[in-house]
Length: 633
Image 1: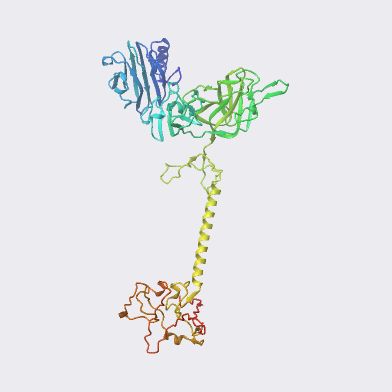
Image 2: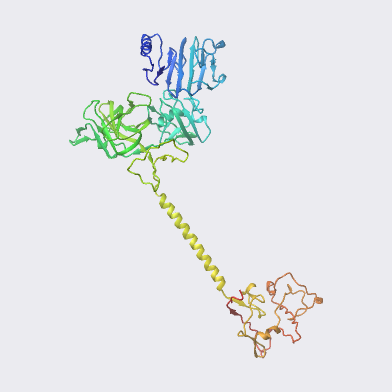
């Protein structure tokens, strides 16, 4: 079986018999077939073929493809999976039956299951083709023609039905948030990007290239991306990251934010280096370009670390103090106006203990990865590690530089994933016994893996909320108790035997029969003659109290303290008590005649007399406040 490593010109052969392996190598070296990255022919354009996804174009795309060319691509994914193709662009000059210029797709060399040939433009062909095989062949032919861009095609497995092409932009989607799958190989496809990871990207930017710039995916692997559309900003600033230099752009309606986890700045504990450069300034002061001034965030130092020699063996080392999950690196040049020192390319190695070191490599690659560094001494350049790695010590080994090796460095990442121990089960120093049989449904599941996060002030906020709630409830309960106690112990008005009550006495406190006076209670009544008389409970029945009165004074013939008969035109108004009707100030209210045979007594009203010798004494109404008794309640 012939396996081709994506992104590499070399071949990796896995054949069981040794003679077969030698035969294939001889055929390749003899030039009898032309296989490069799973392709053959002279009409092949940009090609990236990965194990999960890839991208391929015609020659000179998006310019006019050349005359009389041929290219054939062999695409293969893991066994048991199927391939899905997406045409991002198709512009092939039309000929009858597409005999001269065409794009053809089939699943076997016998062409029993084929799609095409296609020519003309995208409006006449399906944009997505889903196959039932894990291997597919793509052929492109060109004859004599005048115009045409050719084609751009991407592929992945059917596990990612949300596959998009390298040409899709943010303006093509109206959802506020969405997730898509980007194929490998979009970095070098035509398309512009405006903005950076911190600000966001203009919605006219191509999605997959912006995701590579943000460090969400790598160009040689592709992968899923998550995008949020937000309100646009006035100006998008350019930035360099992962080999892509974005542009400065004006205001847009929307901007794209590409989600990326584990992207915080890691604090370093110590810098060290293979050597340091020492120089004297214009006034004779000794300046040491020591590693402790190599941090990008450091202020007050106009220079960075610089090596004492210009050899590839120089290195800068960072100690994080403890192991961290490292996802990226940010570099800058000397940032000194008098010098133009910066590192153009470099390699990375890392260690967990400072003794054994490992070189960083891309996935599916056996060679150490070379990172693209700075293009001047002022601009920040970010490179992301996909996949990330865990380490405490990191070494940067410069490969190429401008004038002198000099740089500032900052690492990006987060804390290492940790397991959570169950409460009440302390970790034992003895190993647990191995299970003797297969696990059952009641077996304990492994502890979940989570990222340790700290939310400052969260516990204090919860405590303040609980305490405030308890204080409010307690205050409300106390007020309610005081109110109820006041109502039970409050004074009551005993007005049952008073013919005229003050307006401040309410109707509820002056109704008849609510309270009965005791024998000790005495009501004093003063007559015009000045004599006083005491009445006890036995004499109280001789006096009548005012009954329902007539509203108004129009139906009253003469002033009297007795209730007129019905024949006199007296009507009973719809009132509950005579106190509900305001006193008119002209005529008095009527008293109900007593039913016993004893002489009736009415409460006299003293009228003002114009004669000076007449008595000036008036009726006196005494209201006695009697506390409520339990029997009355």
